[in-house]
Image 1 (cartoon, rainbow, N blue to C red):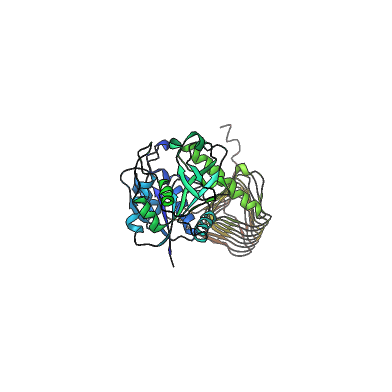
Image 2 (image 1 turned 90 degrees about the vertical axis):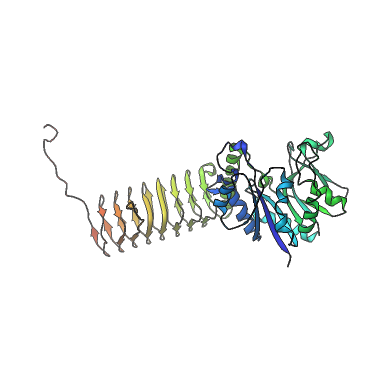
Length: 419
């Protein structure tokens, strides 16, 4: 079986970000851009990934760890030169290599799969992911021949007036035959307006050898957008938020205000659940069917909500498992806990899960009623069918069917204020 390898370019300085760290480690929805690209490659079925690091390489390595193979670029001499750094790793390989970028973080895995499949099916030595845009300014233009094959890619600064009118542009994402890419890279020269080694020149070099180069137009142009500054970082964050929300709505989830709902990656939400505005749901959360979340709710990592759960206003939950039909209506923090089925958590209830040294767990059983303004000092275990009186601070376990009251008796000091 032939190899399928990804080479991810992550060596640039990102000066327009005005940052003290590598541009590609800035986060979109809680996840570094470079990490998103690597995860996308893995989801596309590519498990052999080479990352070309350079400026602030230690930042990239800290994020990716040993999940990739590293090569390094010390001089920034263009994209062609960046890919050249991977030649020693690629030279013993046969098959396909896909070129990706650490600052182009929202391409879909399905798009990469289609690009690889097209390259294999059409027996192309190079396949370019392209896009049709209304305003192509700043992008390399795709030059095709009479039968639709790509002859070359001309950069904006080197394009003629006629070529600048072409609206099919280069995304910068390619799928190449590994050995032919290496041969083409060895022929690159910096004879252009920038004095750099253009990766795009590989296309013409392959054409001059009579090798077929094809193109695939991306269906969603937003996938190929990159990040050069903070404004573009915000724009891609917004696009990703809209994309994720749309996918949940397609699966039967009601989102009342998509502009003010923040659902992170890898969240599962059952049909007929309603998400009210100003709700944040972090990665990995699982929510069942017919639940109601928000408004102003914060569902953090590690939470599992079963069917018919209600999480109300100004509620934060973290590492919580909440059973069917349980309600946490408002103004509560439930962290590091398990709550059974059919339980009601009163307003202002808190699981005090951290003692300054370690996190501990609170367990509350089925069909229990917790009054307002209750503090559970973890670790504590509350049985089924219990009632916890309002204003109680629970420090010990509560047995099944018990009423627990943990507060001092009220004392009125008459005429105190006069004195």
